[in-house]
Image (cartoon, rainbow, N blue to C red; front, side, top):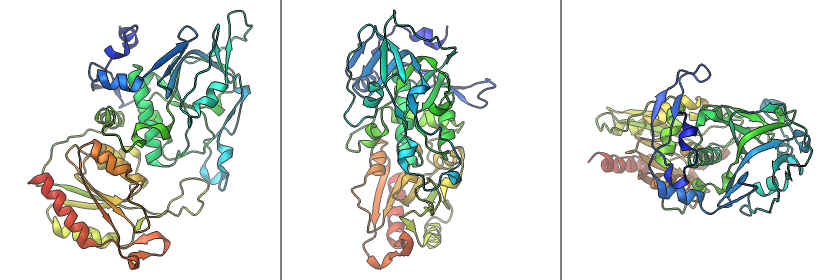
Length: 424
């Protein structure tokens, strides 16, 4: 019996998550792990599902005004307008952002329904526009049959900040969460991207986490999806709600992310052989509207800082890394073996999610950047990691081109404190 057969007909409260991974011999996904869900976390699943509203004989099910499941839904590309996307970024330099979003007219989505009623998602969600593009039809309506039919469930997303690791991680987490609570097998899920952004460094990660991606602009003829999920907007992700005491299934998400990248991890702490990593922010070209690639919050004296840390921990592994130059798999390999992570406030610190369970984070801020931005402090708190923060107080340490001279004495003292918390 396959997993879908096992779960069919069970209530959401009875289908829960347990981490279990085995390697797959599928030629389509060499080295991937098969991921299954089991009986843990009923209350958390129910909290994610929230209030459920269904219509059209359960062909449309809305969950807590955040996401929805549609069954046997047709996508008709002649009612969608926008760039195909996926181009090399060098071809679209200075392209305006509005050109990278799709306009959907009524009829882009089609769903069989005797009597469709309005459904309202959260006010800020683009899913309201998608619902307005949903056309209901009944049994007597003449419909052109679609020859194309996907055998995988589509998790459909619209990305707003596709090049930024933090914001993309909110989309990754949202897709993981809906796959889990709806009991979807990741390898049987295809990610349908409804936007026209150019190719980005994080695009391939979608295929690693799930069973592949397709862009809306690649659909040239009407196609039917047996099951389609409209995923929660990234800005509404619980990862973006930093005030929350806890975020559901964060450790399972970490295991899922690492395992799907075939990264083996061991959370054992060896205080005689620690790894300390200083993340570097460097100028790089990430999207068309920043052709210079200039970034802020850069460390001016990183070599001096690394040397001071090595002097403090002479028998340990202390290194620096511009982590965005690595493949995602290599990023995860490095982070999963990092005991103490140090870095300027920035998207790279999203890797706090994948540090070992005993790890620590030292977050650095320039004088001009508000410490009220607590993205990564919240992640450390949710995972019960050690956390310390430093902010420059000396205006003379702020240099041109957004470089900051770090007070190495302060950071060395913070490293001592975290080392003591971890190992004494």
